[in-house]
Length: 107
Image (cartoon, rainbow, N blue to C red; front, top):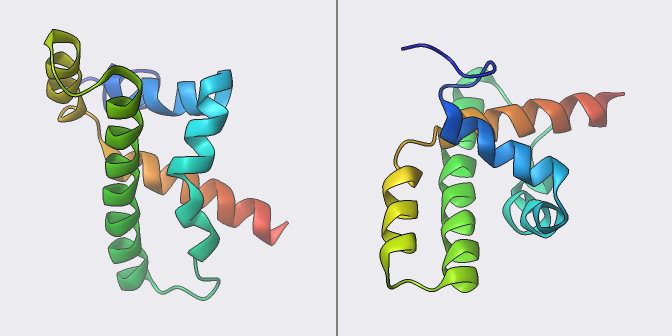
């Protein structure tokens, strides 16, 4: 599968793009990335992967809740969003922010 701007696909690329660069994204970042405060400093590789999986699930749930509150849960737009959400690599996004957070914390 061909990557999109270094990400798994365009849907995956769009999530951090919006989180990082748009006014609504700042609110979304606060809501969806609060889990980073609990990233342990001394995490080992096996625990890190489990933590990233858990964080990815929390990120997806937060994004779903955010979208549902913005556009509702009935109708064509929400159905299309749910289909697209299955294409998003939430693990990749959570890993990206965890690494970014850990590097900033270490600096």
